[in-house]
Image (cartoon, rainbow, N blue to C red; front, side, top):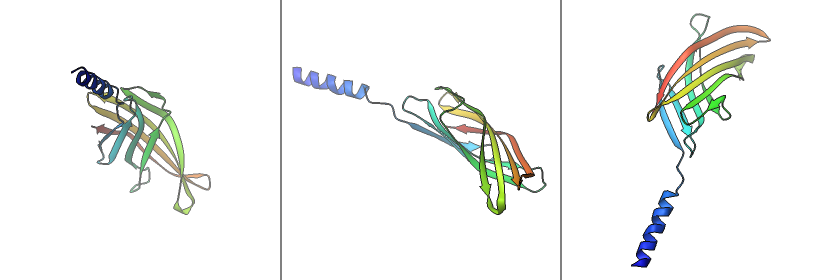
Length: 143
């Protein structure tokens, strides 16, 4: 009887000590595009990915893309991810270059995450601005 009780206590201890697993939250933006957030074993977000479409100043043109955010973020906790004032550069066919500036805020709302993304892309060729595309708020819900 003592061996059975000891084995049961040990198995309970092993189950309780099992590490929490990373979790992926998926969803859609208000533009119908994909978005996702990955948390670490501690429940703190480690990655965020959002696809977007931004209308341009030149009539009939728009920029499409997706932005991946990874640690280190501007601010991060188990309930909030904020990554503001970040920019990166891309090269497009035909010698066109783009500088993309982003602002991301994602907050936990119960068992889901709700966020907004602002994107501004400046296109240039040979150092001269060709067009600017911007969307101020891409909203998304992940759960």
